[in-house]
Image (cartoon, rainbow, N blue to C red; front, top):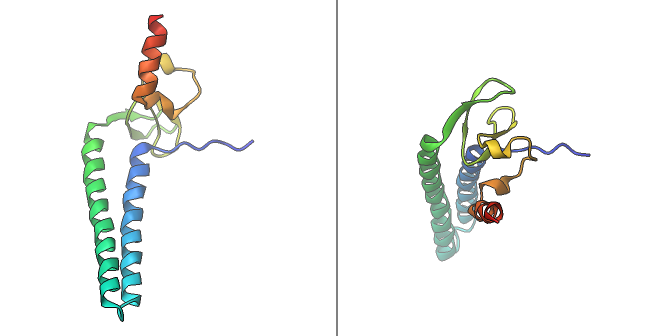
Length: 127
């Protein structure tokens, strides 16, 4: 049975933004390869620049979101980390973390962060 590896949401989004930068550079490099067809080169350059600009927007968004994240100390590795949502993983050791007492002891699942799940949970508790 394979071990399940959890990833921190902030790190996942930062990785996505970094990959957008590299994808944009690769697309623009492809445009350089097509410099004989000027209109196609221009399209590749525009798409590449849009990918890089979108990555800047994602970095700005995750930076703003990171300031709202709750700083906690991981009980496993004792290093400071940030939590987004009801459940998250440690940035360093990927230990599943929760600050919701109702989720203590339950199997780690990212569906606990979804609004749809919380609404279902409230409806189920009201019955």
